[in-house]
Structures are given as structure tokens and as C-alpha cells.
Image (cartoon, helix red, strand yellow):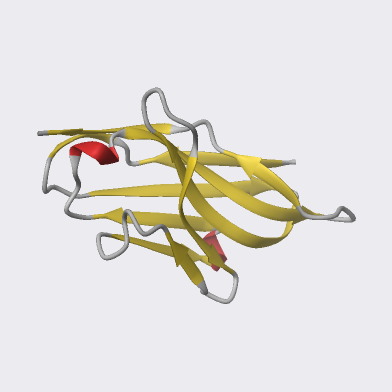
Length: 120
């Protein structure tokens, strides 16, 4: 099993910045992909950004140029640096990893979610 612990959410004014962190632990053999999704109030969960073990990233158009995803493989940690935040970025942000435990095929795992609120 893989456990994910997120941190860094909170309340910020428009134009401000926040940095989210997510650390994976457990019987991890390898983490293939790490990423962030978000679920705005009353809407479906959507992709924000992902990054592979080879540092290939994919960022949603809605946050491109403002958000940066990075990972520290030695710490099994993924970061989301969010700059120039807008009220429409308000959402619960979820960490997601595609990870292999020993002897198993890759499985998706989700964090518990962290609230990000951007005031206008």
C-alpha cells in the first residue's frame, strides 16, 4: 500500500502564491507518475499537472505559465508551485501517484485533498 500526505493549502489573496507538497510512503518499488488534480466547488475533478520519473511534465492550459510541478525522487515528493493565483483556482487539490509496490502492477493512489481558497 501507498500513503500520500499533502500539505501547503490555505487561504490567499488573488495574485498571491502557494506551494503544495505531497509525500508518498509505504512499500514503494517505483513511482511512475506524480501529479495534482483539483475539484472546484460544484464541479468535477480535473487535471492540473503531472510529472513523470523522467521529469516530463504536463500542465493544464488553465494554469500554464502560473503553476509549476516538480518532484524529488529521493524523497518521493511532488510539489506544485502556484503563482498569480486567481479566485477560479479555488478548489480542493488532490495529489495522485501511479506507483508500483513490490510484486504488483502500477496502481493509482490519491491523497486526502487540501483546500486552496483564493479571495478576490
